[in-house]
Length: 505
Ligand SMILES: [Zn+2]
Image (spheres, helix red, strand yellow):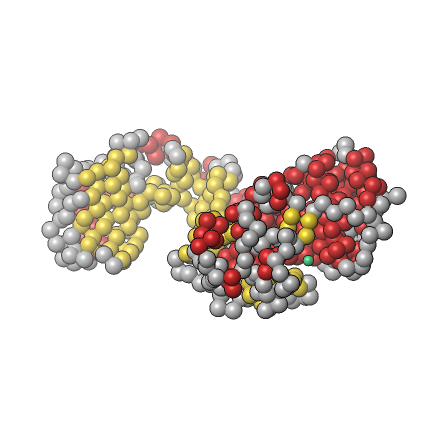
């Protein structure tokens, strides 16, 4: 059947004045092999579709089947080389009627003009291409698969170049790479990681309902869905989930949790009474903090814990959460006593802070002061990350929601970032309480340097610590980090902070 474009719907390619999509028609039923049917139809309608490529350059690729019918795909070639992205698809419904044509071919005269005829000597040698591939693979990680190469014409946004399309996989980090290397000049004109990743939908507290609703009278209500919480949920994207249907992505894996959340459609919108809500909280918040850390420059080889950490969102009935640094574990467990700990993002990020320190200095915190610095740093990290979500009166308070479920009755907050305690007089040997001295000085550093520089310097300073570091080491490391990163303009101001606190003499 010859198409009459005046009686169907057509979407035109404005640049080339070619019909890209022709639909809203039906041929008579066409019996026989779908490939033969499609080829005959294409031959009859080549001119109508304004396809300037020769029929012999449109090579049959495959038939894909769906519930509603079949699509027959043809790939355009130029001079024997396939053109990336240049396809014709003939769609046939279950009544064997063709009902749509999609045409992404490139006009033959354009190809002729931009590519012309080249001689073998115009192209780079196989060795030269292989050297480029080896260099790129090392840049991405460690080569973990065979390398697949195919010569193609790269056609995108008006560019037409003879390229070698290369595919390979890496590990550390995992990636599935496609590159297009220009066969004439060796430029890598396109590179992408196509490891299957998808965005899920979730609902979270950001960081918790006390902050969002600005109410101190909220109670756990046995993990119940009281109406009061409705306005505290924020819709969020759960980034780069893998294809498993679980909450598993590049930086978080919550499948250690019993009855772990799973959704084929990646829909993870739960409320707090649902056990899966806390998994969504852990996934979203850890992922967000890791991405923030990367945005400060700690990426690739300079990354900090830029790998998957395993989380058990309901690992204990105690009102306690912890990072387990033992070899082979290195995971985070959240407890359900009182308010479920993973309902308060500040508790999540405090624990992630411990994981960060252990990632930079394995075995971190052998001395009491080191452990206190661990507690103080976790509090600082939560405080700085959620600063912008809080009203002024709440900016220095941490874990306000978690504190509403304490055994002895609701408290104002878990800890504060503004302790006036001095070193060493006010040390009492309990790491969380001594940690308030450390979080308070970190907060002063933040005031001096500004949030972003302070966050960067404090993270960087951990690289200058050891397992046995104490407050003095921590203070010196911060001064060193500011000097290395920003030239030491704030050495005096930083020194004053630590001296006033009694940490430096
Ligand atoms: Zn802690």
